[in-house]
Length: 142
Image 1 (cartoon, one colour):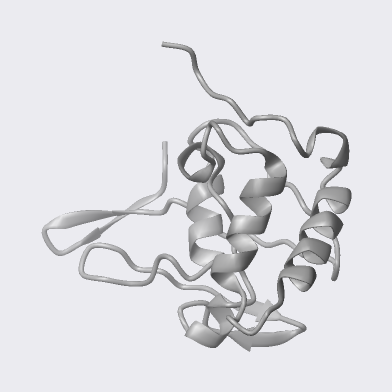
Image 2 (cartoon, rainbow, N blue to C red):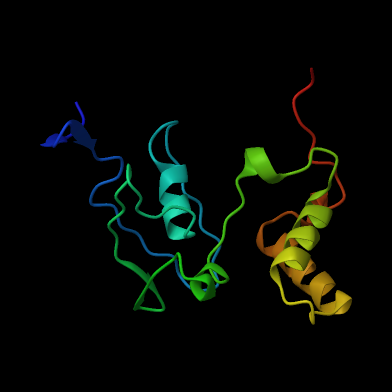
């Protein structure tokens, strides 16, 4: 049974509690776990997509290069990101097109096409996707 504590007229439910981890610089890291384990909640908090509001309380100590940061700060959000696979990848796009498109949207307008191409190729290599870079991502058949 999940930990609960009375707070006024409603119960408090902890989704993630006492969670920590470290991502080495310049490394691709995977977060794995069962459905409902809190992976997406954790990534949303780290990427600054979730903050405290009237129904949700987020308490965290998030560090970037060993300095405490607020992931909801726009300067920090530009350095921390993730792509939700199910929601963001076009089924008719290739890994090359998807990574290039994401980089074009996220990087400054002054980034040249050559720089975008080089970054895309590097990301494909780091993710082990170079061999399938021109394969359609695909999706469920209906």
